Length: 341
Image 1 (cartoon, rainbow, N blue to C red):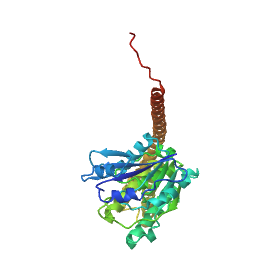
Image 2 (spheres, helix red, strand yellow):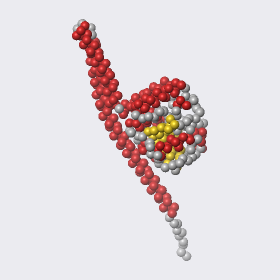
Image 3 (cartoon, rainbow, N blue to C red):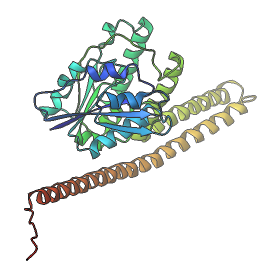
Image 4 (cartoon, rainbow, N blue to C red):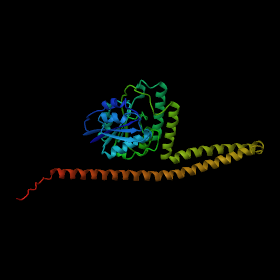
C-alpha cells in the first residue's frame, strides 16, 4: 500500500519546512509514504527548500496556474507514481499531519473512497464569526446540491483512493474543494469525513482577496458545476418561473378584458405575457438539449476514466518489465575470457 502526500505550493519557502516536519513517517497499514510538491510558479526558493528537506517528487509549473490546476496536476502525478492513496494538504501547515492516519483509515477499511477533514470551524480560533457563518452556509448549500453529508466543504485536507482519483475531472480554475464534492456526489463516489484540528495561522490566505470576492466565485462555481450535472432541473426551474410570470400577467389582462374595461390600455401586458411565456418555453427546450449534452459528457468522463486506467496499467507493466530486466542483468554470471598461450 503506497501513500503519496501531495502539497500544492505557491511561495511557501518559509512554511514548507514546518509542514514537512509535521508529516507522519509511518502509518499502520501503509507500506510506503512519499511526498510530492506541486510548485505553482513560485518566485521564491520553494523548490530548493523542498529538495533540501527530502521531498521525494517535485512537479514544477512554469507559471501560476491556480490552486485547482495545481491540485489536478498533483493527482495525475501521484497516479503515475503508483499511489494507492493520495492525501492533499496545504503548504502553510494549516492542517496537523498527525491526523493523516485517521484521514486515510476509512479508505484502508474499504468504507470510503474520498475522505474530507472536518476542521469543525466553530473551534478554529482565527476564523471570524462572519467567516464561520459563511463556511457553514456554504457547506450546507454544497450538501444540498451534492447529496453528501460533508460538514466542511472548503477543507483542503483530503484523502482519495486510487479509484476516486481516477474519476476526478476538475474544470474550475478557482478551487477544487467545492467541485470535487459535487462531482463525487453525482458520480456515486463513497464520501465521508473525519474530525481534524488545525494549527495556528502562519500567513493570510492567498486564494481570495476578500470575502465578497470569495463568495462571488464560490457561488458561480457551485451553480456552474450543479448545472453541468443537473441541467434539465436547473433550466426547467428557470423556464418554469419565467413562464409562470408570463401566465400571471396574461391572467391579469384577461381580468381587465372581461370584467373592467375590455382590456383597453393593457395591450402592453398582453405582449409582455406572450414574450415571457415564449421565453420560458425556449428555456425549457434548452434544458432538454443541455440534458442530452450532459449525457454525452458522462460518456466522455467514463471513456476518460478507462483511458486513464489503461495508461496506468501500461506504465505498471513497463515498470515491471524494466525491473525484471535489471534483476536478470544483476543475476547473470560474469565470465572471464582467457587468452590461450
